[in-house]
Image 1 (tube, helix red, strand yellow):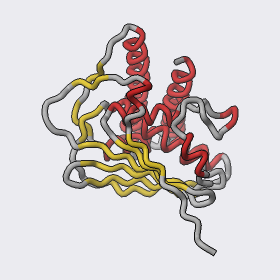
Image 2 (tube, helix red, strand yellow; image 1 turned 120 degrees about the vertical axis):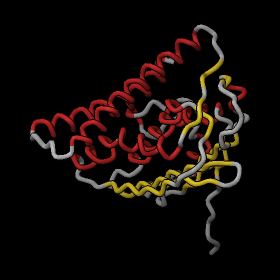
Image 3 (tube, one colour; image 1 turned 60 degrees about the vertical axis):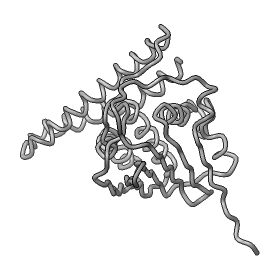
Image 4 (cartoon, one colour; image 1 turned 90 degrees about the vertical axis):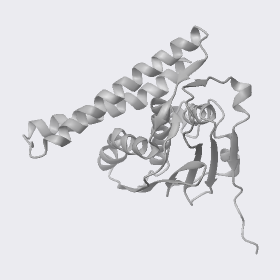
Length: 252
């Protein structure tokens, strides 16, 4: 639990710190031509901090044995937009300081809402974006897309990074498994896995060495008046459909 708290709060605090620094730079330069930019930045700081308190609240509920989480209709495309802004310090500012460039391409449709927890879904997006950035140490392109069919909403997060072997793909959602050495806790994808499970969703992974990775999340559209979501234990997590596509090797 302590490792999970450290992991999630590192992501949140990176967002808060990065956004605060950008606003401070604008204020120092008196660049107030677009005050709405500053308001948007402050709103994202507030939202990030609120997410942090909700994570602590969720941990507290778990230790007290409470089993549910409030749900509401959530716009997944807006979740993606917010998460892109929240992680800007990572994929833009950090990239520039590191001498690389990461382009972000968005294809966000006007889609039906899903019944979910916005804080948890932002956690999912934050983890996926940061993982994608880490997978592109020499720069590249991060693509985010939302779409829908009659029953489901889909989120696709793709990078042009180093990709994953079959062995890594098969272990990627295991708690404490990491390819980042001492930089990683091995909890990011485990968190993603558990959250999508609680949302009755599915995850598909497409990746091969040197060809980047794509994570496809499938969530049911919002319907009915359900407003609670039961938490799940490790055994129930195994019922989540995790599809790892096998890499096709061309014949000689």
